[in-house]
Length: 459
Ligand SMILES: [Zn+2]
Image 1: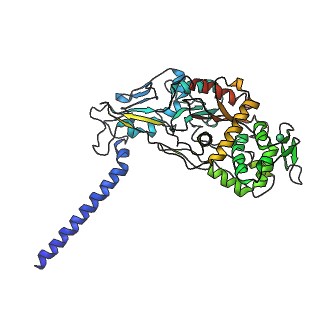
Image 2: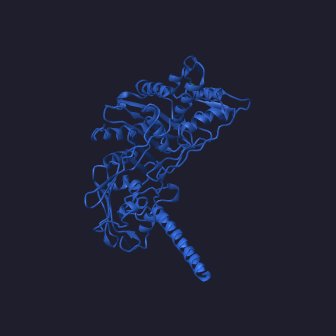
Image 3: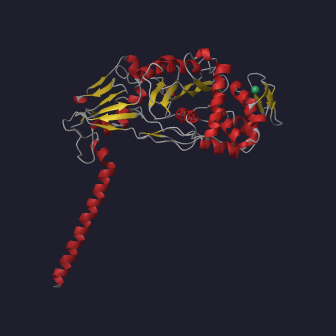
């Protein structure tokens, strides 16, 4: 009997180990299955280390890239399309970390957790991105070889219509090796980089001022063009010109440094940090698994550097995509849709999986404050930027000319949104060393948005 008992216990232990192993394996399969299936040694879907299955299209079904057998690869469109969409589509070398070709490999091979198969006829899947190649082309042409980026996205649905980063190259004829490291050709400047924001950051300081400064409506600053903040000669804030006595609304339109420097010092470093965090500028967004770069800021408790930090200088660094989402939240009453880049994934048998799950950001700005800022941003355009520079666009915007060091042209920014019916889009344009914002980034925004208006209206 004793012998039998021992054997029974042994069997139970073995069964337990087996069960534990099964549970462990199933859990691993659920978590890592798609990674295993898209492992490069998988010869049925890889050839010479390259995916040999699946295609990538833009939102209208224009082919951007088709993976073929023996590692062959076919790009759709002409050279400008290939260059303008490179940082969204990706290339063979995998140097571009945000490219769909590598980020969404498991979706292209068609891995499915339940069946485990790639697809029944081994053709892979068709991956439809949210970008529109015509808008990307317009943006890339407008950048005209300068380093920078353009982003346009639907703040109600999250769909990124335009994601263009420059410099870029035609992946059909080049691998980008002619660029130096300093050019950052593989860098997606919209998602993976951060830059000195300059005056576009005044939107955040304005938000904090509207909510935290008593009687902001009757708070005026006298701008003489220079403001000696501390006792040292270098402790001063300078402006492009003397703006006279200005209110918040006028200061935003004039982009008056001295007003916003005063306001930041009244608000204090802690409040500035609180509102920068709330605006989402220190967060990373998850775009179908691609993480955006977090912005970084330091706000001193007082002094001239606190003033500069409220003007978008000092140690301020912002990611262009997060700024675009903030503009979307201003447009949309305080919350915006989280950005996304995948539209749909279609199987070769016609069945498709939608990626239309709309998720929203937290409240980035109070609804009532957003309403006030909308009226100010519209006033910026009508009173200062010139509506005639943006024909047909119901535009709300803020310029930014960010100093980046002695002897260098400033970074040029233009951020905002349009309210044309059927076109709920927020945008950001950033040009490194682009010079004066309105003629540089403003012009790129106009050329891009004119093409947006030629796309089909959405709800
Ligand atoms: Zn001023």
